[in-house]
Length: 599
View 1 (cartoon, rainbow, N blue to C red):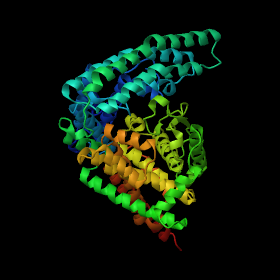
View 2: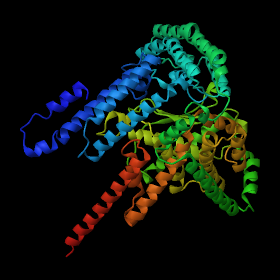
View 3: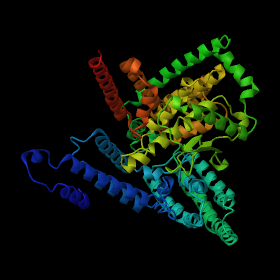
């Protein structure tokens, strides 16, 4: 155990020694105090080592810094994780109240997960067309506060560190070449193009247009000049160097196969990814079959909808939708307006679904052209709500997109999906900071968001058969993911097989098929989390309804689902069972009390 934590533990135990104290020494309270001290130490170190993350949670102490992306920093972080795990395991959690025990279990899993990923050297494959330092840094002008002169000076200081951060990442990626840990070559070629586009289009200059009119003329001129010069002389050249490195020195070594199983220890790598992303013990084969079963179930529901709409079969219903220009966007702005409309119409309905209603704003914006390969996604706002949550929407090649899924996706990314879940989490009380601001369990976060899509039906939306078809289409898309992700990485599927299944199920259209296929190749296992998590939330809801009968309150159930932050599915299951038991006990007590007072 770390000395400062041990000293705290001993200090809180200085009391008269009795047999009962010896039996439980150190006392529960002392162990909880020591555990919370360790949690805070870990959290503060995490903010210091990851300044961008600190900014994201509204802590601006490190606002003028970027993280250290060097191999040395990665090794130091792993050593800290191992030391923290030893310290945590030295604290006996026996007798802890539920939330403290849950915190212990969550931190243990997070640390073990990080150590396992380090051992697999996943850090040597840190860039692809979906994620990477090149795109994360390019989001700075949208992700950081730019409302004071100091914040602008901090932003400029960060811009000047971008060349260092990119160079450090290059050094780590070169290790991947040596260790034969490489993403697919064709995806890395996309990364090179992305970096080139960022250098040419300079999204960092967006900050100039956001300089408040309330700044003095001198400050406005100084800041605009400093940003322009830093981008022109330091940032853009660094991005061009990074793009050239990827194109000439890195991508040519990329693997030619699309399956992660072809990497060293590849089968194990995928099994780890599946376990991490789903927080279950399901095998790839079981998940593959589940996907096929879900495709059949959802397709049957779509067929029923088609019949209700007066069509002889699903194919003719689909053909009618595709032929109707009403469902084809006429501009990128129309897609954004559709998202804004659906989020706005859900807001007043939230009291029918929850009693805890955070009031943090959410905005809708287009994904920049140089990130066109990214899917529509959500980026968390700050806990004080001053920096809103952001729904970033895919709008490129709009004429080949469809509007039919947009209602469901708006609920998924906005409310009552990601924005609702994260806003509630950030305002939880009495929990360690790592639980209030942390993630790490995709099956919960994405499972909740996919579950949230169907909540529109609970408040009276999706009345139009085409609208409900869009909801089912969104769900079908996630079911297909179970099949294609496991197909690629455990069954040797080709890219053509993936595209064929999307076309056969009609779960995606146009350019999205290609970008989504690339996503599963680049990010093994991640796409499994959505459907696995959604099915767990549905299962828990049905269990609670069955067990509680007329006492079941949907709002209370949803509040409970969000009241402990992000959890692995097995711990969420156990916690729900305890909640159901408590609800039953409360009902029994009320009934007994009522009977006792009956004259």
